[in-house]
Amino acid sequence: MAGGVRYSADWGGMARYTAMVRKRVEVHYRAGDMQLSTIGTLGSDTGKAIYVEERFTSGGKEKTMRVEIPYAYVIRVAEIRDETTQPRGVLKPTKKK
Image (cartoon, one colour):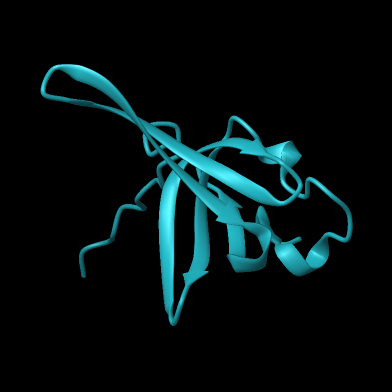
């Protein structure tokens, strides 16, 4: 595991991603001949599939979108940090010549 990315080949047992449940993740997966990605909260890990969910408001109503991704189609799962909590770099002052 490098940089918070867990590859499906790195895990031999069931429920490979339970340590990431309830964390914000980016999942890359196969769907036919395409590679897709989704970002959301890892809702659950059944040992055969993972569920990524995203809550949002549409038309004044709270809604939840849930994506089921079987293990066989998972390419990689990476925990992501919320942009508001990421540390910002400090710019170094430049000298005038």
